[in-house]
Picture 1 (tube, rainbow, N blue to C red):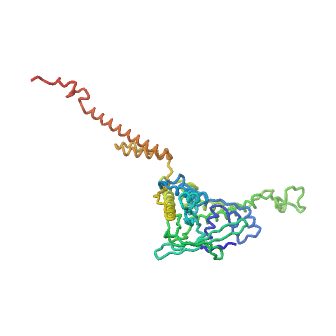
Picture 2 (picture 1 turned 90 degrees about the horizontal axis):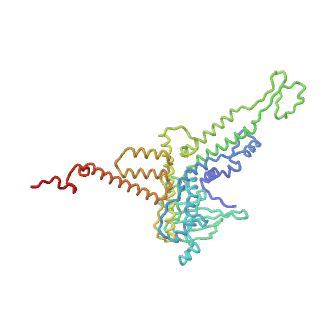
Length: 472
């Protein structure tokens, strides 16, 4: 059996994982909590018929997907080795774009994830050898539950970082390894403390990137998970749904009641499970009775309330979830909050990517000038509304070609958001040239109106130059 190293938040991370994927305790029913007055048969039934309404997954995805809707803009010039590096950045076939998007989910889910930029022992003798053997840096994602030790120096810089990896073998066994990094050394130990690899490096820092799900201090190695309250709420909904299922399962079918004399039942074909007999002298007609629906209604109301609370806590209730009647200003404020949350995480992703590339440069010596640009604005444009606003702005009648050009840019961004940048620039240039030509035509028209010579009113033009001259 593999050694599970101590981590103070391991239980929280496992709950977050299972709540997002709908597996683990939500897959086998072990998340169902036993009621104090509940017997073994009842709890087993509830766990058997339990179903999981996964709200954690869609809420988390809505906090990430808009960032990676389009390919991230990246620029680094020409580098054959870097081209190969970002095509298969983790030695598992994932490109840089794929790796960043996959692990952005984990960074947001756990509030932090660690990216180790490791290196091969030796580079190839030539660029051809390096590319052929992929003798270059590569990255590994480390979930926070596997971080087992860390230490900072007096300046708050990380000087020791250790994490565990678990290799699952075909025979069902799990092999544990402990990886330890310092600013100058690295070491890998097997279970039991046997060292299977160690050495020194000269990059001058621990090659680990802290990728936060939201703004946090660098000394917060295991920051409080942002989505923990949402996962716990989803856990509660799971339990309430199981109680509701049990009520429906046990009490859905109404029971027939009818009077029976002292001779008992005769010629009755209804099963005894569906019949409740009472004395004939009660003088009541046969009827169906059903359990009280009050408990089920209370459960349904509480489930709906918790679902709304999950969307409210996530800050994306303006995007998904139960829509409420709100004023235009209130809706705008809601979306501004959503937009800001997306922008904040987008910044965290951009900073993490730049740190990864910086470590690549330290390992490889590749002198590339790398830039990347993550989106900052996630507003969803209403095309009709945007066009209406543009027409209203134009109707103001400002005598400004720049103002007209800016209106055209806004219209293009709304009506054709995915237009090729070169085509967009061409359209803007044509609009600006047309505006300049119109301005010139207007200027000539003004001259024609104000110049009497151009209106046949006389003057010193060539055609009538001598008509007003008198001989001396």
